[in-house]
Amino acid sequence: MTERTKYYFISDCHLDALNHENCLEREKKLVAFLEEIKSQAKALYLLGDIFDFWFEYKYVVPRGYVRFLGKLAELSDSGVEIHYFTGNHDIWTFSYFEKEFNVQMHRKPCLFKIEEKKFFIGHGDGLGPCVKRFNFLKNIFTCWFFQRLFALIHPTLAFSIADFFSKRSRKIHADSDCIYKGDDKESLVVYIKSVLEKEHFDYFIFGHRHLPIDMRINDSRYINLGEWTNKGAYAVFDGRDIFFETY
Image (cartoon, rainbow, N blue to C red; front, side, top):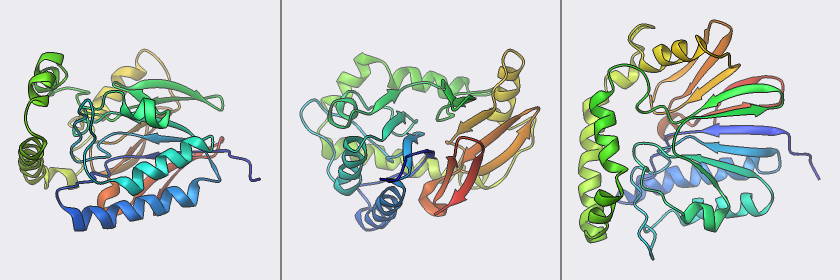
């Protein structure tokens, strides 16, 4: 049996059950990727916005995604360690992934030591300057009271509302997602510099930005995975170095 020695990182797949045809094609591509890496993967890090919208009801789960969820179960059962960082689109994940797939859920950035290297990993939303409005909304979305109110809405209406705001947000940010704004205006770059003033990390890995980035900041390396949706971008760490790839 091949020894599992690699650590994989993907983000922003934005699987969307309301757009079945496009979602199915994207999901099959994602499952094919997971099938290809399963014999080598020691751990898989899902850095958020894997779903374009996810709301976990008490007794039901959203329709669709069966190929992806089945593959997650297969990887987990075969011994692959899976970490899931909630993003701003799939913030309403509760206990389903932990109980069904033995996935380790993370709701904020975390520090990891992997093969003697220090990693700072998260989705990337709400970090850095100029995010007060975003964090205000995030505090509302994570409030148990508002979560229970939303749970009272019928799923058909709830997912339609979410789909409307998701498309609206994507349209607003479509242009800025394609442009690097400069070191002093990229919120995550500013945030990383502030972290490095207090502690050194070998690697910072984020998603959320939808723009693939691989750059040096002081003696650290910052990788933004961009988005899986169109580019199939991912990163892999082999125990010595990290590589930015596309599938």
